[in-house]
Image (cartoon, rainbow, N blue to C red; front, top):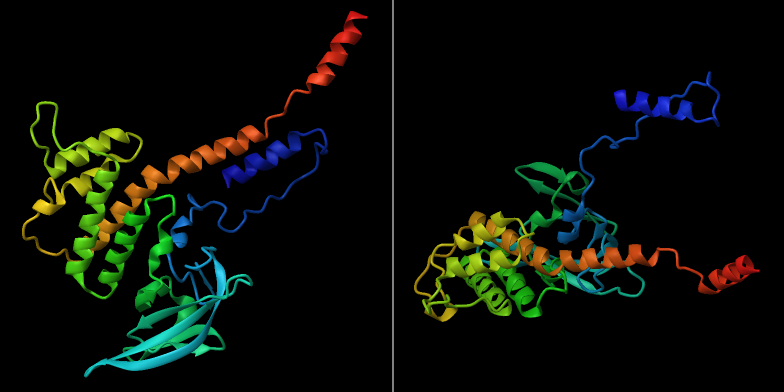
Length: 295
């Protein structure tokens, strides 16, 4: 409450207000939170039971409708449920397809609830609706900014798609290939000044030196991937990552890509907007004033 008392004291110091006038300052809900950053929502498919990020028109937090549901037998002992979801944007209306192992009930055109362990779970109380699905078409391709190289985006997207299907060999391979593509795109040298071949870890260190503003921990995590060699074609046998290992590494790789290719351009864009607000000198006005002074 000390902050609110200071605000009240500041208001009373203004001549517009009476010295004897008392002020009641009410805190706004959530105003005292340390962080309001909710950009992580832009990396989701479904935000809640009525808003999502459309993979077609790339609009964020737009409404959607569940237009159709199906169920089929994936195997002898596995039933899978499919959902067709249409974008609510007037200029889009495109439909995506989503698979889940859970029979999600629909109320009207919204995801409503599902049963688990004989308990009803309501979607409106769920923080991570994406966790209910193991496959999307289109995939989560839109979660990587289009300022990132398309070939790398597709590899990362394919890796995430494989992981959702629990195909960890494919997921591991695609992500490893994406990292090699990054090194090639950045033209990271393969030999040092003396002609000695640089191993994979050393090449990542070279990349880290090119971007000192990117948190070094991201590069360190990539450098410590076991089994990566100096070149993609020279890789031997390697064990696929576990789901936890893959999730950690793919999120790290995505952050590196965002820090390298997206954030700098965002800063330039903000700077340009600020500079565009700078008042321009009226040269004609200056000439008139100067002439008047001379007279």
